[in-house]
Length: 507
Image (cartoon, rainbow, N blue to C red; front, side):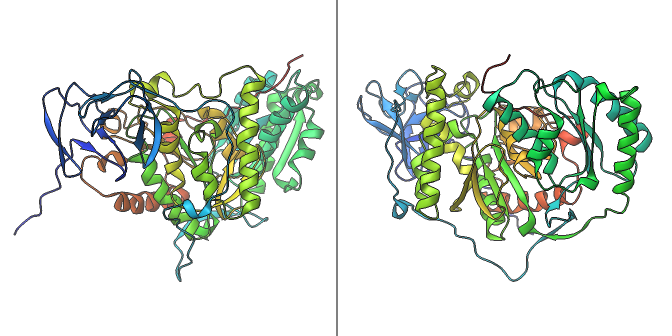
């Protein structure tokens, strides 16, 4: 029987025909002759894996191009075969930019197309029509003073009442006391959104009593929620707060006794897409594969959330051109400029990115990082733009206002309704959040070294083992399994936390 040999792993990869740089797939040594996109290039110097090399001679002041778009300008003459990084490449971004809606500039958009048969998952259908991927009890605090009380209630309740539901979890945070104005509003928006998330079959809201984040105003902010699935009390108003909390958790557990998984359409999925600890491979492998999932989910009528606004800077025009109409385009411009004003208001540089870890992994400029980051949105049109704490409309690709911080942006997507997160990483991170957090590695090395962190290895694309489309199909199937109850590593390891966006004065 004959066998077909697996394709050889390339030495370097050019992403787009217009690129004048390629990315080293393995460490390259000075003097090596390699083949890239049909051309042969001799290395003038060592190039670390994940970093860039020039494919042709580039003059000082000339643009360097990756993903088919400029990622900065050369600060000196760069010869073909040279290492391209911070020593000879700088950002072109500075100040505030003007924008123009140019929808015809898009090479190819993948507009949603309905198919006769929708894939399904076994989820929990809520009374408001949304579908959860878990049936858990969440303990949410109005204020950080009761974090340890909440943890104690969760532990006691789990020991006594944990059977028959998917888990009881407390999510502490340091805020809620002495906050004012928009700062308090951010805390309430995040907590109210978490209270509404369909993965929470029951919620215990736990307060202290004297905090500025008063229980009544927070519950009002949550709006029209199923109050039969919510319990709340202030610790100052009871004798034994741990016993009181455990008793209320028991009531919620009884309310959830009849909850069962039922077949739900892929159109009912709402997934948040996130990257953290990125490297030079992230935009090529993991983010591109996750983008393929975005195309599939939106094609079936499901929802995908994309956030990290500062990591859109430098790639925002490409996103704006994908807006479904002028109204969405104008909302996106307002969100981008509003976030830049946020930096200016606090006296901080707008383009202080990538991070040290990103640079060590091969990312040089914010344009490069952003162009790689937006690959997570695939080629779906931008259907909606929403503010921090607002609920995602559901179908289509939605851009959400939030900073790039991993904890804050991931929590923001869950507060807006995401029931699963797809989290790509090249450097690795153990972070996990209230909903199943699928970690996708950009390279095989981190997947092999951290199997208790990584759920899915997109580095197989770089290894020549599988194509982007094959991996996107495989990851989408994995998402459906997780939505149906398969545990992710963050769930197995107990890595669950939240982070709230702070912006304002503390008394």
